[in-house]
Image (cartoon, rainbow, N blue to C red; front, side):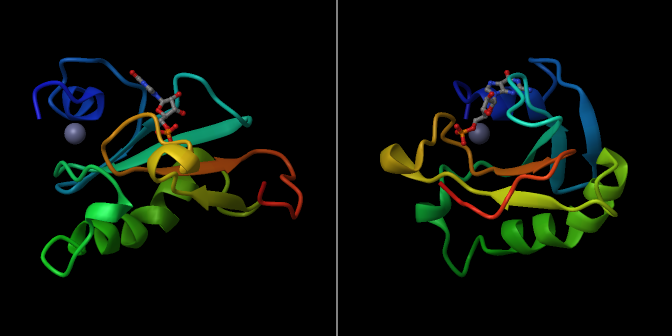
Length: 114
Ligand code: 5GP
Ligand code: ZN
């Protein structure tokens, strides 16, 4: 996707502060952090949102969640804990149409979700 910000981060057109990378997953610091630790985790394949997931591309999600323990360690929140969030669509607050998960931590985030 030539006009996708996260695809541009994957191909190096836009620089990012990388936390973790393997063949299928990239994790980098959010440009506008909402917590002391805020990492964006993306699949290297372009999937617009959780709404586009299906049996044929679900490995992108399992690849991400398989990498989460290592990403948490690299981000320094494996012991203290963290929250994983996916925003989907307009009401979900999704602003970048490339599937991603937020990893938030570095402070006690409390129990509420909204
Ligand atoms: P969404 O609101 O779609 O769930 O999350 C998109 C996230 O991507 C936002 O938290 C936003 O700050 C982050 N973001 C948008 N553009 C860039 C960028 O160019 N670089 C980085 N590192 N983060 C970005
Ligand atoms: Zn993309």
